[in-house]
Length: 330
Ligand code: TXA
Ligand code: MG
Image (cartoon, rainbow, N blue to C red; front, side, top):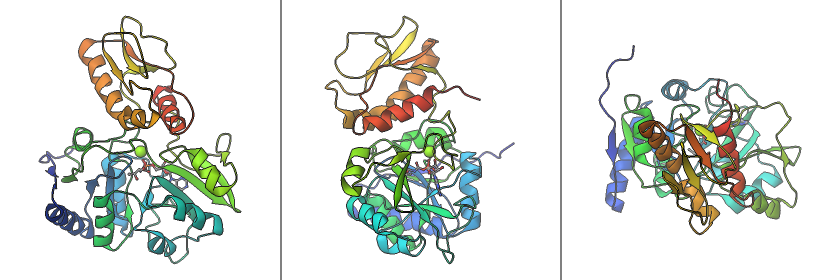
């Protein structure tokens, strides 16, 4: 039994002054070991002081996340990251090209890093990223420590791209959400591991593989078939409650429809992008999955049918999330 807790406070700063105050309040809570949900450009994160074992343990508790699944540590930039991980020439190149932004680098952890061992689940590596949202950046600077932040949802469920999604998922488990509006990118960061100056793609995401190839000069190998050391990878993940059917040309009568591009009229349909724009589709993906999930429950539909999505650019990340959302649940 969990004790009844009041709903979380939601701060919606609109002016720079309000933002400073919201960030100040969040920093104060975080530096006292608390959790705060914050907007990043990808999805909302559940942030805590990455150097505090107790604070990091609270993240796992609030999300009901298995403790073998490590967290991404958010930094203000290269300088802060260097205190915790070993940068290689390839890592420098990628960070300079894509930070701040939706790229996470998995690198060797420095032995004197102050980051809690819980955050990296005891691995010898650490995942670092510099997020590109004003609020996240100001908050990291105000805290002066890296922030561990997984997506701000219950483990395994659809990731949050609005403050409302966070409230729906974690009410009673957190006390403060900073509302920065809908996330611009809408899918999580791309995660690459650098090992012996070779790239391994652990999770497709906000930075398309093609862009990474252009900078790195080499194609990352897929993590498939390797021992999975972490990523969003437990096969079923990002999952709505309703059953999800992929590559549907049209929905059956008892299905809701996640459309993409021009489509005939079907009831219970939401379109990721009428014009077939993949960037727009990524930004809408999780919100549409949540809404269709609710429609399925209300109308007692059999499930969600999802249209085929082209695999190029950020379409690779969209297809990855859809595949995991459709995977058999345990
Ligand atoms: O866009 C994002 O990355 C968002 C925002 C909040 O920054 N965060 C996010 O965190 O997606 P999370 O915890 O939902 O996913 C992080 C993924 C997990 O799949 C985890 O297994 C993987 O990163 N990961 C973390 N540390 C790792 C490591 N040392 N080696 C391999 N994978 C790691
Ligand atoms: Mg997640």
